[in-house]
Image 1 (cartoon, rainbow over the protein chains, first blue to last red):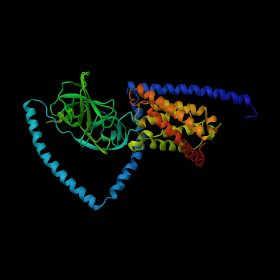
Image 2: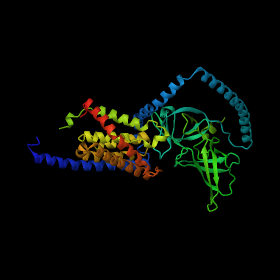
Image 3: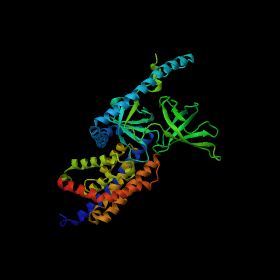
Image 4: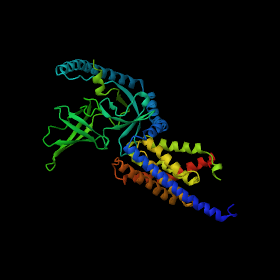
Length: 290
Length: 163
């Protein structure tokens, strides 16, 4: 065939490369358009949602070796280890139950005092457990993937906690899994207050897994190393009163108007395997109050 | 002509799924930044092996899939993947006859193009934090691993008669 009509082959080659150039331009234009639509509107959210059906299983499969390894190590534990664990947990349970008893009294007292002040009481929010099945490989972003999707009543903006503090919020709900933006992400900030004196500031992530910073803390502010920062519930994203971070260092530069305050998150963000999703936000639980 | 003979699309999709799996597989923190761009390597291979089939539309689709997979802004990896596949597809005749070292060097540049364009879009969307130089480390690792990926995928292509 090549020998028969060389001109035709060459011509078709040229026209083919021409067409592929136009096709490249068209595809690039579609990509740029998609980027714009995704950044400025939410018209292409369905595309992401539909893709979730394909990417969800990939995340589950990627988590499989980890869960397999933890299963094997669980099987390989000796009775003695388990007995030790059991004893430790029973002791811990006793301590926590004792604390919970006091908490019930304090909560009731809190409700009474709030009634005296004519302000609505806050109920403790209901939570449900999810498992982290993926960690964002891109070092620019601090995100994790959890194994609960739209079928489990996960919604965008839902607060995510672990046993010792706030972890982040749900930013993207897929059909099988959801994506959680961590509080340590560089684009994330939330309103907190110092537990000791109630001073409110803004806690921003730095993109580093265990470093955060406080923004616009006045030079004369009363804040010291070791102060606990708790969420305020302002912004209506996070429930109020959960521990978020501990102040790690306070530096004063005489040339600057604000203090340089660094904090460390209280939650074990890079070690957590299970997280709690808050089922009802603060404002919802206020409405549920009888 | 060649379109009627094409076969083995499911095999290509399976290899791409494996690439995606490796892309999100948890790694220890110490070597996390060394993770090669598996999907790009796979797409470069298929673009060189089957240039009449695997083109920019495949590149954009796989890139879009990666966008959803890693939760980046839609179009970030799609744009970069489209460009890489286009370059690989239009130079496949030279790439096929290059000696291994030279081929790896070209793969380094192709993955570099991918990383840089993906960085540009990420920076535009306000989510870039680290310097792009640190993002070129995956390109080096990808180039080192290219021969391995090449051999595995060539074996797959011959074993399952992908045309």
